[in-house]
Amino acid sequence: MENCIVCAAVPVNMVPYNARPVLRPQPPCFVRDGHKVRWNGRGFAAPMFEQLEEKGSFGSWAIQSLLAYFGPLVLLIITWSYLSAGEDSPILTLCEYVFIGVVSSVLAAGISSVAFEATVRGRWVWIIPVALFLAALASEGYRNVREVTYMFYVGPGEGEAGLGLVLLTMPTWSCCCYSITMILWRRHHDGNQSSPPAMR
Image (cartoon, rainbow, N blue to C red; front, side):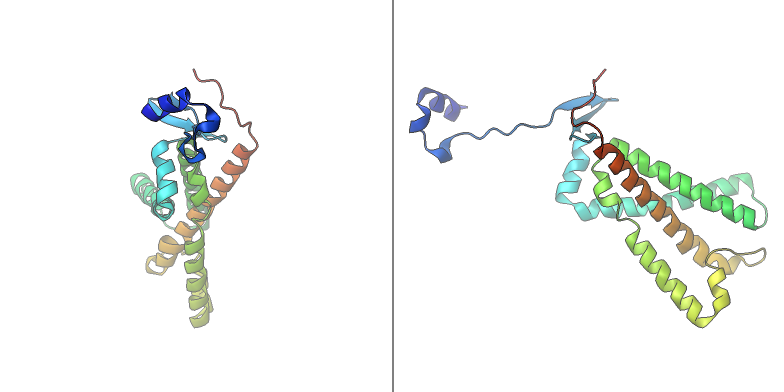
């Protein structure tokens, strides 16, 4: 503050350029649902997640990858245990794919709504799971073509053969749905106006 007072008392042309204070406007902050958020021109973002994006981009990507990979799968196992689902069938397997896709998409939409900057790294969650899935698919196909079918569907009485389906195929599908939702969410917000909406 002392430097600002001195500069105000001295003509501007007499103050060295390096000594002039530089004022950078900051995005406005609001309180939304009891949490402090900042309007970044595309949506409301939590300041703490913004710092994570700026200082630890890998950390943001890693956290989202773990959530997208294991979150829907754990919820599926808990739901199926509670409902006591019957033997495996094509219809039941299709329901599992739909369930995981919906849960991962809702998860991505919820995270991007709270912290919009998460879409920067969330778009790339699918890369490693897809690479591992393709490597496993090529390995199984090289040894036995029939083993490839177990990566997508396992019939009744073939539980042990379904480890690849549960631990790799479905989590990969989850990560792909998560990243697609992040991409669509970001494109949707990029088309919005740059001014923040009215706060109630």
